[in-house]
Image 1 (tube, rainbow, N blue to C red):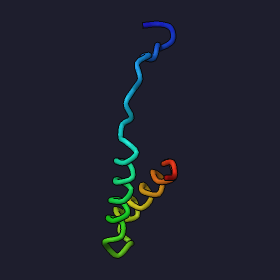
Image 2: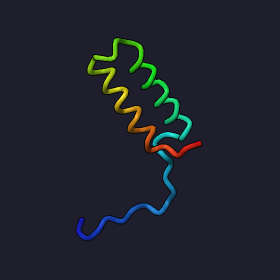
Image 3: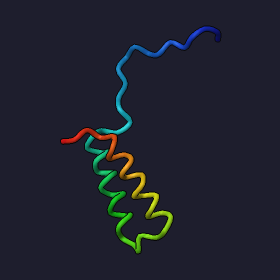
Length: 59
């Protein structure tokens, strides 16, 4: 195939809904808080939660 790619004209559904994204942030923050706060997993969960939360529109 040569030339430029043609994007589909049909509307696309979001990967997750706003409600689902907010729930994911809530759960990530919960899991980042359940330990001593020093494990890599807890720090990663917190970092991901804050990154996602920063991209969400305010209520």
